[in-house]
Every structure is written in C-alpha cells, then in structure tokens.
Length: 213
Ligand SMILES: C[S@@+](CC[C@H](N)C(=O)[O-])C[C@H]1O[C@@H](n2cnc3c(N)ncnc32)[C@H](O)[C@@H]1O
Image (cartoon, rainbow, N blue to C red; front, side, top):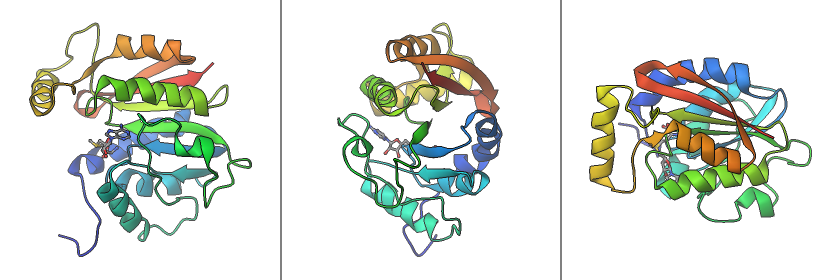
C-alpha cells in the first residue's frame, strides 16, 4: 500500500514491455502523443522516457485516475511527460480541440499519435465510436492511432480465457464486452482511419494500428 494517490494495475507490469516494443515501431518521430484512458498512469510513466523526442499527455475522465497519474509523475524525472487531461472521449469537443494545453505548445508539437490501452471493451460501443471520431478530428494525415486489448476475430473469441472475460465484462455492464476486430476496422474506415496492421500480444491480446488517411 502506498501513502499517496498512486494506484497500481498488475496487468500493466506484464504488458508494458511488449507494448513498448510495438510502440517503438509505430510511433512518429516527432510531435505529441495523447494517451486516452491512462488509468493508473503507470504506462505513461514507463513509456515517456523511451520517447524523448515526443511529448506525452496522459488523460482519463476519472478524477481518482488523474490523481494517480499525477502521483506517479512525481517519480518520473523526464520533462516530456505532462499533467493528465480530463478527457472523456464521449464528450465533444475534446479539450485539446478547443483549449491550449498548459505545458505543451501544440502548434510546435501537434498531436501526431493517440494511444489507447484496454478501454474499448470496458466502455460502451459509443466510446469506441467516439474515440475513432476524435482521432479523425485530432490527427493529421499520417497520424497514428494505437489500440491495445482483447478482440474477437470474425466474431469468434480467440481463446477460452477471452470468452470468460467477455462474459464477466457483460455481467458487470451489459454495454461492455470484447469487440469484434472487423467491426472496429470498418468503423475506423468511416472515420478516415486506415487499418495498418495487428500484432499478436501476450495473453491473447492484440495491438491494432491505424493511420489517418
Ligand atoms: C481498464 S482501465 C485501463 C487503464 C489503462 N489504460 C491500463 O491499461 O491500465 C479503463 C480506463 O478507461 C477509462 N474510460 C472509460 N470510459 C472512458 C471514456 N468514455 N473516455 C475516456 N476514458 C474512458 C476509465 O476511466 C479507465 O481508466
């Protein structure tokens, strides 16, 4: 137990290194990464020092999550990791579309990538739709959207553990659930986001990469 607001999600310790290896191959060489749904903040603290050429802005709609993100940042010495933004993908417009950001000059460092880990199955389908719409609004041509999580493929679960997880998600909230990859790709296409590739990740997860047309 910590004596501050830092929260810890055990999965982040397991998935952060494999995710980092994929991010190294897909993130742009300059600009700002907007991390949507940062949760505890452990990912941003871990990733940002590996990308000193990029500015990293975490975000989450949950105030407790933002307190955790800010608390983790006290343990992060680099200057490219910024304070968390209050961003709910379902609320238009997103803050960065309308307001200057305190610690990043977005004219100098425009948002060139959006990273979203483990959100679209733990939120209603509307959140996936609004994430893709927001990425369309915010990213320049060539910008990257990186998604990570479990998926169905061709409407089939890819592992019994994913099927059990899907059932537990839907028990918690009938609007939650593991998404079908082809549905996400189809929706992305309507938002000018071209599917680039999927990468198999540990524990039956996928990295899914899109590029703004
Ligand atoms: C399972 S946690 C994942 C957190 C972190 N990315 C990770 O992998 O540890 C899901 C996160 O999605 C966020 N979330 C849920 N609905 C959202 C929405 N509409 N807009 C933005 N974030 C949302 C929650 O607040 C929560 O922090």
